[in-house]
Length: 229
Ligand code: CA
Image (cartoon, rainbow, N blue to C red; front, side):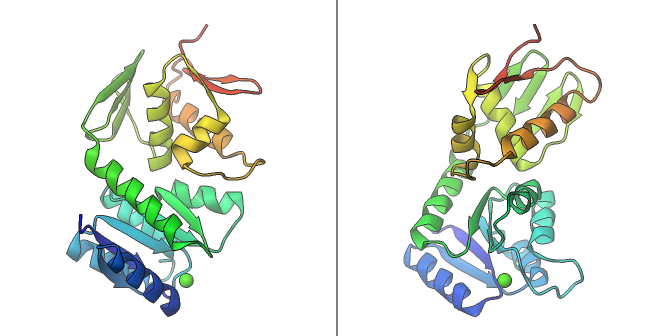
């Protein structure tokens, strides 16, 4: 307990609301009001989790929340929750692609944020390292490295989670609902094509040397990890 949470948010009202709410729950709270300061505070204090606003004043050109997310992710596996007023699916995909673990659209309820913080902190702490394998795919939950044969496969945070879900359920058809629930943890809306997008990324990366396909589409249902037949 007493995890350190860094909030990067330029809107004073929201920042104070979050600071009070998180402190009341027993978290130690660090704050920053732009990306430059956020990266500095993260470097100096090694927070356990970051709550990151997407739209931040750019003290350095291009250093919005998305870019802060990319830089934090490049440096560590620290859980990141992005906050945004943007609602379109493509924006959400961008945020998740930049390495965010979760995503909340403003306005949101504090309880919703607290639930997601607890889930991410718990996950970060309790994961005992495992090696998951299927055919020539190998995923190390300790180092977060993925291999296809001897080849290293570089994945974003969400691609990794999706592949981990497949590897934990080999040869089982995973429905779209189940995948949404396990990987994104909440509903993106009925028309979202986010699963298709991420399966496509995973296939591109795991088949880039012409290896046989392992993630197959089950039309109208979902996807399955199995040997090519
Ligand atoms: Ca903002």
